[in-house]
Amino acid sequence: MKTILMLLQAPFPPDIRLEKEIRSLHAAGYEVIVLCNQYEKGKAPQFPHAKIIRIKAHFKSIKLNKILNFPIFFNPRFLFTTIITFVKYKPDFLHAHDLPMMPLALILKFIFNKPVIFDMHENYPQALRAFKKKGVINFLFKNPLLADRIEKFSLKYSDQIIVVVEENKERLIQEKVNENKIVIVSNTVDLKTFKFLPQNKINDFPDKFILLYTGTVSPERGLETPVEAITIIKEKIPNILLLIIGDGKSVPELTELIKKRNIRQFVKLIPWVGHENLGHYIMAADICIIPQPNNEFINTTVPHKLFEYMALSKPILVSDAVPLKRIIEETSAGLSFISENPKDFADKVLQIANSHMDYGKNGYDAVKKKYNWENDGRNLISMYENFEIKKVR
Image 1 (tube, one colour):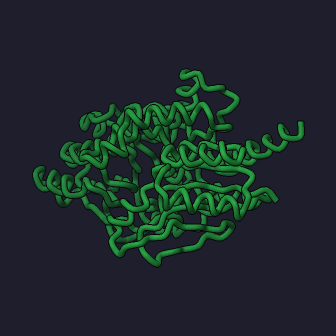
Image 2 (cartoon, one colour):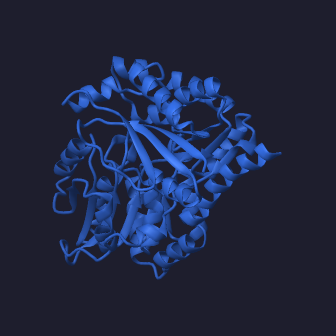
Image 3 (cartoon, helix red, strand yellow):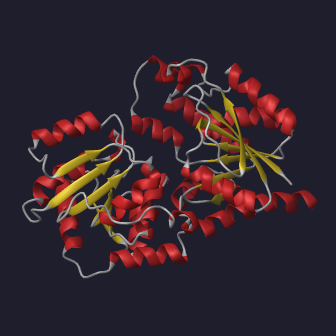
C-alpha cells in the first residue's frame, strides 16, 4: 500500500474537494494522511479513510491560533510536525493543497527525494488580488507579488500539477509549464454521496419565485449585482425572492444595500446552514445563481455548487466568467449574464422564467454523462498510477 501525505493549510474536515479525493484514493488502495491546521482548541473531527494529524491550537482564541499556526514554510510548529510525521509514516507522495503549502512540500522533496503533487484549487495570486485584504500582516504574508514568485517556483519543481478547469491548464501552458505535468481534476459532484443529502423541498417560502445563491458572502462573489437586479425583476415577478445562504464579511454591506433599495421583502440573507442541508433549499429554488464576475481569479477555477445545482436539475444563471459561461453554453443548463450588470442579470432571469427550455434536465444529463466525480476521480487515480509506471520503467 502506497502512502500519501496531504498538506492542508485549513482545518479538516470539512472540505468537499479533499473528502472526494480521499474517498477515491482510499478505494484505490492508497493510505492517506492529512496534515492540517486546528483553530479551535479540542475540536478534532475525524474523517473515515484518512488519518488526520493537526497542528494543534494553543490558545482559546481562534484568531490567535490562526496567527500562531499560519502555514508559512519556516513556521517551526508546521515544519517540526511535518518532518516528524514524514519520518514516522515514510509517505511515498507529497500532495500539497494550494500554494501556501508548496514551499513546505518542496523542502521535504529536496530532503527526502519524494514526488510532489501541486493541487491548485484556484489561481492563488489572483485570488489574493480579488480578496483585496489590507494591513501589515496581509502585506507581509498574503502579498500577491510574492505569491506570483512562489507559484512560478512551485510550478517548476513540482512533479505533477492538478488544476480544476481547462482554462487554468491553458494558462499554465502559456507560462511554459510542461503540458504532461498537468492533470484536470475538477470540482464535480460525487453522485454516490451527494444523492444522499436531504433533497426534500423546504416550505418556508410558499408561493415565491426563488433565486438561490449558496456559499461565501464576500466582495469577490458579485452579490451586489443580483441584489440591485431585484429592483427591476420585482416589477415583472412580484413574488420574487432572492435567497442568499452563507456567511462572510459582505453581509453587513448587503444588508445596508437591501435596506437602501427598500427591497427587504424581496431579499433574505440566511446564515450558512451546512453543506449537508443545502439540498432542501436547492430543491425549493426556481433558478440557482453564480454571480461572481469575470476576472483573472474566477476565470481559472469553477465552484462545486455549479455541478450540485445541475445534479438537482435546476436552471442556472451564471456570470460571463469564462469557465462558467463555457460550461453553461455547452450543456444548455441555463444562461449567462454580463458581469456586474444588474439590467442584464434581470433580463436573463426573465428569459429563463419565461422559457420552455428544460434547462434543469439538460444540466442533470450533463452531470450524469460528463461532469461527475466518477470521471474526475478516475483522472486522479490515473495520475498516481502513472507515477508507478514511470518508476517501473
